[in-house]
Image (cartoon, rainbow, N blue to C red):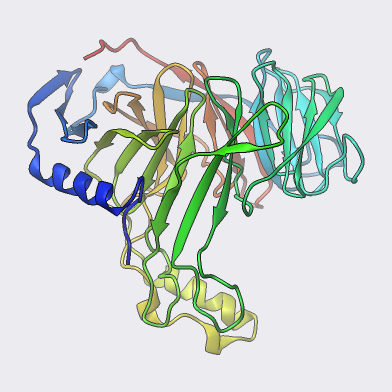
Length: 406
């Protein structure tokens, strides 16, 4: 079983592990009420071990809901079926991609409906299975369609052009992002040796392929891969609730990732160099009998009780880090599930130097798994469900008391 990330060959990986195990902390830096042990490993990466948050008492950030869009009843543009992507433009307008209706509802900063972009179909400006949104450096909206193309619009909904999507496989959610040079880095994936045929072993390894595309999209430069090996049962199936890989690419050209059974995150360049790792002490939530029963019940309800996973097919604890995202002013946000802390009810916040600021409680839970939340300097945006599983877009204003930089 490979529980590591192969960045540039096994020799490099082993050297990194040896360096990490052989280096001690060189200094302790204190900021606010927390502290961090910071050292430099032999491969050049900075390691930050946070022993406490910088926030204390009134220093901590809080969030307050100041907008909610959605409705339980009716047929208007604010009745969402299945939201697959959410973005905001420079004017504060919200762009909500509904997978079921295959269109994008655009709402003003006060929540009123402005216009609708696209619609189902195969023609120019129409969507087949659109599931992702992003902004290019010119402020145009790119709509990712797993059918094999991008559709490009102005923020006001004028259709501009299409571009082909040429990557391996399909990644949900879409991890595509424009880098510091303004070129698109798209992501494909592959499960080596996995056929998907009934009765055959499940995928034991996943390879992410980031590709940087030129302006004409005729060819792309393949970047170093990001690889991960899953924990497997003796029957060749993935362990349920086992460790996996969480990833995020920011607009500054960095990839953030984590093996999500521990609260350790890594930053690497698109060229494959790991430059930072940082951690906090956290305990994963245990896999309970109720979790096991809920999974097995799916097979029983489908009339396939013989296919229900055996008890040893479940991990002892759940994945901890579920989503990583960033704002544009130097902060990393982590959505996690920990012992006694349910998924979607809080966010841990770090500086992009790896220093731990602290935890924000969320007044409304984050819908999981899709679409991912995102943050700006002033707000946090995400999807929240009600007790009937109706989806709502929420905008949370960030309140940030001034904290001295350590």
